[in-house]
Image 1 (cartoon, rainbow, N blue to C red):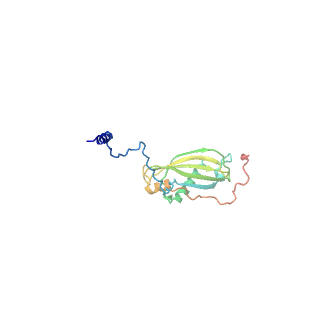
Image 2: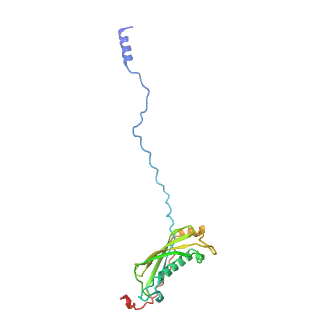
Image 3: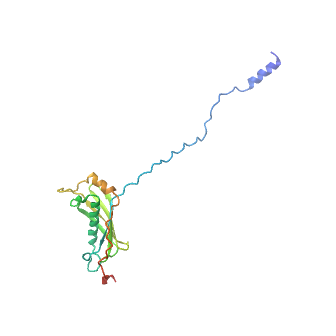
Length: 198
């Protein structure tokens, strides 16, 4: 073999053999794209039943001090409850819903002839109980009394509490604010304020 051919063979043997092509993985692969937000708007969650009722402080509601007697708040709250149940079509519950707890904090005086606004709202519907919260406000909007009342469901002739029917639970717990019962614009009968207000 000639010297030139030997030199070419030696050079070819010295070169590294060709390697097959390999894909080297990226050390930090890209994160997947976040899912696009849903375009469907979620409906607002239902709110418990509530109602606002207006009354006036009647002469029979006052005591020797000239302002409303503390027991009057019980009647205002029960009047609001009657309106609420009537709005919900549940007036038949009266007679089967004994009161089991009532508490009130008295914060301001109300006088004969004053307009009183009572807001009653459901706070919890138990298996056989119903929890109300209430706020009584005077004509200027300030709180006169706040508190809560708990009633139980006891069907006729039952010796204890009985579970609410499903339809009743749904209405009480999710019917939301009901149409208020407000006074007309007739002039209040109070006239001249009592001397005890001065």
